[in-house]
Length: 174
Image 1 (spheres, one colour):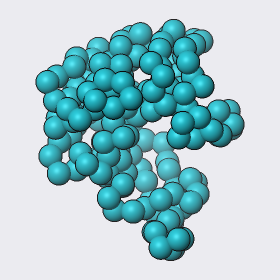
Image 2 (image 1 turned 135 degrees about the vertical axis):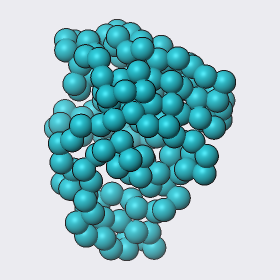
Image 3 (image 1 turned 90 degrees about the horizontal axis):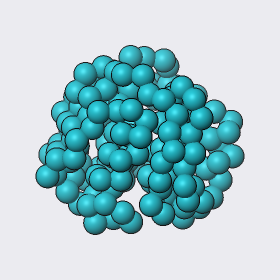
């Protein structure tokens, strides 16, 4: 059970995409906190499949695309992400940096003009990768390492402090 998840509809695109990929997510309860919807979500083990992501949902998950790409690397089949060219001008060129990171893990991934094409379903192995000083890339690479075989080292991992200073503590609990 993941507790106290922000459920503002302008930010829940990642939940929709993960469910489309086959993730078993069940909202257990919902309430208001600070004028925003919040809830607890039951997450069950599931097999993910590749999908195509684009269009109107992109603004609701633009910051989560690095970790969605990680999910796609573990999903069966091909995932394509479109309409995400905005990621080229974030803290790093996130399309390129997520591709470089996942390639280091052994994932087949291509950068498209407006997104990514990820061939999932192959076992990933520990890697030495860069965060490029980008907090979201550092966190996504840490998530990729969770199920990868072997040790992973992420350069400039401290970048996570920009958005979640306690990330490493939460990560260690996993």
